[in-house]
Length: 252
Ligand SMILES: NC(=O)c1ccc[n+]([C@@H]2O[C@H](COP(=O)([O-])OP(=O)(O)OC[C@H]3O[C@@H](n4cnc5c(N)ncnc54)[C@H](O)[C@@H]3O)[C@@H](O)[C@H]2O)c1
Image (cartoon, rainbow, N blue to C red):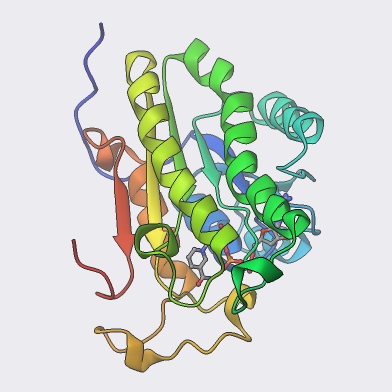
């Protein structure tokens, strides 16, 4: 068994990989932060990623749009194959795409279809994308996968519904399984559990700075910089962890 390379400074020059849910919010910020550090990034989403790509291009950073529905195996596999062909290697995957679903009602009012839709995108999408990149990463003997979970998967939600909490708790458990199984092949798998972050996802939800010990809601860049750390060689002795990025709302 090969041992892990030593940790070193953040430097993503020559690295390339995929970010899902890249059209807006956290995914967009993740693409830009990774590209700023020198990485080439495939921006995958069901929505057009024109803003993400245009902002990167205006700074001379290589971010490419590859349409992808993470809940559809065919679409995910096609996107991963295209990304590999375009960029040469797949050094990282950021499983960020997700939906919140509706919340705030009694359990008997949740339709099975809405339960399944949230699980399909958040949890199944994370599995599908990870499965699609795995053979490439195993073949290279290296890869860094970061899955965006949630504080809701830790504590059962502040305001989120049962499907969302279950999907995020499932992601946290999947991270640990994948980390154990990837370690042998040089594949790192970690998660991030954000608290409330100001993005379109929560724009109509009643979160406020008074809920956060550090005095403000999260910004997409707060998550993006944590992703940069977990994708880079600065975290070469960290796998299977769920990093809480929540302004002090949850301390464990
Ligand atoms: N914003 C928060 O407070 C918060 C807190 C904890 C965790 N998160 C998680 O962070 C991630 C990003 O959320 P955000 O706040 O940026 O939300 P957002 O709604 O702004 O962005 C989510 C992106 O995912 C894309 N997406 C949805 N379904 C998809 C699919 N099937 N295939 C590909 N892309 C798809 C959307 O089109 C969108 O661009 C999500 O996993 C979310 O659950 C967000």
